[in-house]
Image (cartoon, rainbow, N blue to C red; front, side):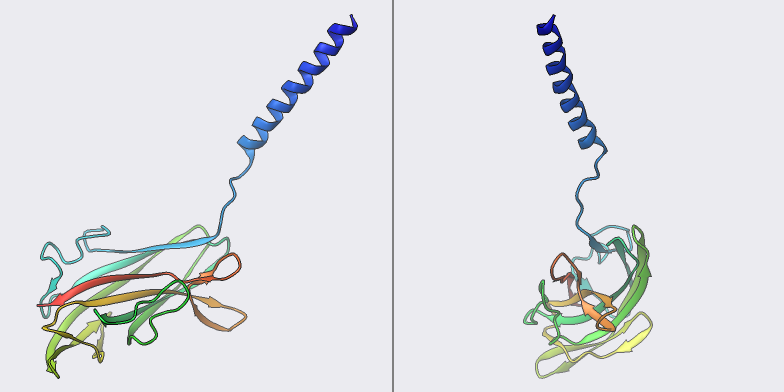
Length: 198
């Protein structure tokens, strides 16, 4: 009789341990790291085909309409800014810790995004003029309705590129800072799209 009771107690303890472990695993939330995800979508709602099948060439006065989709998974509302810069093949690129501050800013946009939500931010642009300056083509542009003339040129109008940088508002600094607050440090986040002025 004692042996049966001992066997029963051992089996009960073993099954309890197994089932409680399974229940804990099944009901526990997976560990998550806060993040902000984003992308540049073309007019065809894809992350490609930005120039409607004409390669990377953009003709003067052709209006291109793109948009950013920015998803906030930080666990709190975020005030997000996107900085637009125009560079060329020799421009210093942003990285995980620093923006492309040597590349001229040509515009920006900002939105409050609640936690778990996605915001859509429009980006409409066109080339108004192409001027020769010291052997380089310099562009006059319209970006989101604003006329801009960034001091950036490219040989033969080839290999211009947009840098799009994600910035977030930091309450302690009382200003926008590059990237977003990650575990232990800020995480820089940027995108780029190349084009030719044709």
